[in-house]
Image (cartoon, rainbow over the protein chains, first blue to last red):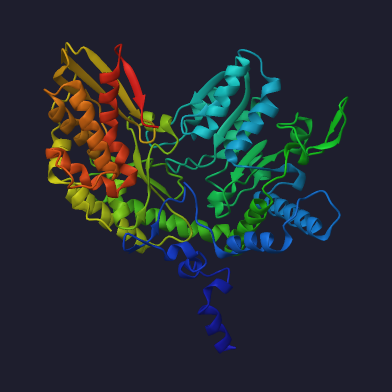
Length: 423
Length: 150
């Protein structure tokens, strides 16, 4: 008995109560073995896209090697298998984000497409000139531009709730901007440029108090914290596969069933119809009504495998690991004279945007790359955020479940090198 | 692996720290703006012409060390040249930083400091933005041209 316990404690990945075994996780990601410029890759660009574990890569290969066929048609064996795998993936995503029914999950190309779908198929028919759409200053371009297009099409007006110097949403201003003409609010769960975690449940409650439906952009949230759309109470929620260790080209839109059911189609084509004649076409039921054309079957299966992978480790455990990494990164970077952090919200995900004196972030990025460290430099597709802080760009280290304090030490050493070059 | 010192040469760091011919040029006959949407760098080039000769040139704008130094050294290089000489120099500079021409084929004087850029493909546009902007000013029939590198 004693020996068994000793074995169990030496194998922490077997027990949910033990800490995150980062070395074991790293072994699941073959790309982390890569050498870049003579150094082992330190991949700190996870908010742009996350790396893929073997489980995801293998699921995609397995599908193409053994079951590739078109879905929802054909009675042959492979078509049945492919359909089952695709619909199983939908079920995995549904459970992962706490949706009540699989019909509430629409597979799309990306979170961007999900937002465009809601803008065009849900909001557009409801809008008249002078109606209002409420977003925030910290949105990614993907949660700004679809609404601007919609405003041009309908004469609606875009309202933008401001953020504080720490990069937190100003909740009072947000509530003030919810008016009698507000038809929808669209807010990010986690800011990709600042790391701020928004109090989405409170925001939804506020908006619903004014009769305003809410879309939450969860592209940055899915890989880092448990999501429960029922508890959040939102009307729409968007995620993307590639930021949660799945493939690119696949994402999911959650929509409350009665809303999706009442919406017009987004695109026309095969799959989204029940019958077609030149006189009359009958649309398919949700979610298929919104999945025109042959979908990214392998992508959905890969996204399902990513969900399995995240759930096997546990979002709570991942969150605790990342929280500790964030604390360490914030502490070590801010201890370097001349380094300025941009985005210092109290409730933050493991995203650290910073500036090194007046050295341009692209120069920092090039020097970091020489050290094998991958970070994002630029405006992070969030130019209004940069404008809010009066800067053109930042360096952004965004962390994930496989990052280590040793990689952060390499980052801080490389920042010192930047200062040496530009002293 | 490349040595960082090849990219961030002292001359480049110096011109980044204290750019020459920096600021608005009053009485400029031509002006053009360059923009790199990828990184947000913006630069304005002012040209004063005496016939075909670039009698004065200046730039405004901020960016990374490579783009700022490129702008500064460009203004030094083309001042006093004819417009066609400046265009020819742009071609040779572009060939050098993209690696189309072998470095060492011919010296471009101080501009040789940018030869290391060829080893950093993501940074080539930083070095060429101001030159594209100069070219737009040279080719402009009217004032106020905007060019982008994307």
